Image (tube, rainbow, N blue to C red; front, side):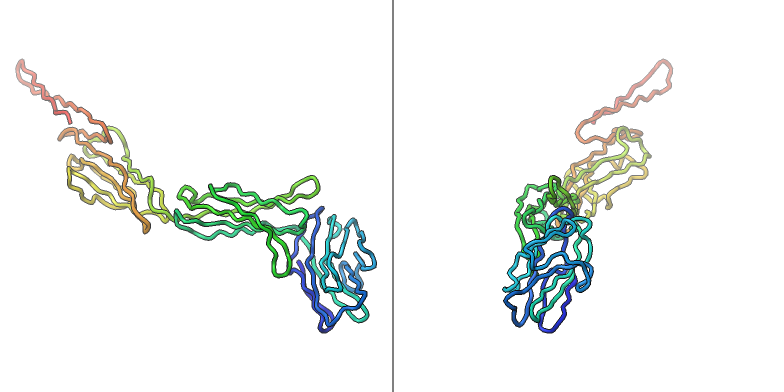
Length: 342
């Protein structure tokens, strides 16, 4: 965390308000300052823990100095009011609040900052989008060390394209951005997409990641109707017709019954329950799923009445023969009756 402050009038230093780094890596601190004038020999000083009584980490009398293994180099030209500084070989012993000063015949200024490990990448979705629209996800991660940029990897490319860029903030801080552009599909709804930032540190890589769940608006699709239970259904049994469809937002369901060319509403809701079937319930049934983006019909499910007495059969494509035998008790006579094939 970088906290800005200044001493003296008419002097002000500008650095990022937040700055992050990885142990074992490097860190560039964008830094500039304003002043009425700069002397011929300005001196830049970095201290830790206190701007006046703290331990010197670097002084302008040395082009680079080491403190607890930390290498500090002022990259900017102080005469041009540029105090940009490079920290290398950052170690766990370097934790603390750092202060930067400029000393000249009359110029004095300080600004403290504290560095920490990079946070997770910033993953910005565009919110719910309509199926078929071109949309994008943007993943941004800090770039503390320009010589060792992180790699941004997507868990899935979604048949899209990826554009990688380096961004410079208004305060001079650097970040890397990966823009994933794709066409929204209902198949991607509720997918969990992860962006991982891999930072090279020496011979290893360290990672941090962020995830987002996609939300796609789309009309009903893959609508199906089924009947439970299947198989032989007897007069008086309870039967449930169940409709399923993929849709976002969720679909509303309407059932229809077809007798010949006539089609009539049979009910509403995802499940249509016939509490006690009768031969009059036989027919072809289908459901319609609908939301504000469209509608979709299921295929037909047929409830066949096999005779007028006891037997029903549910079928989508096949026909069934049901034979009932009645025996009349007469002397020396047995009569059989065949029920017609449907």
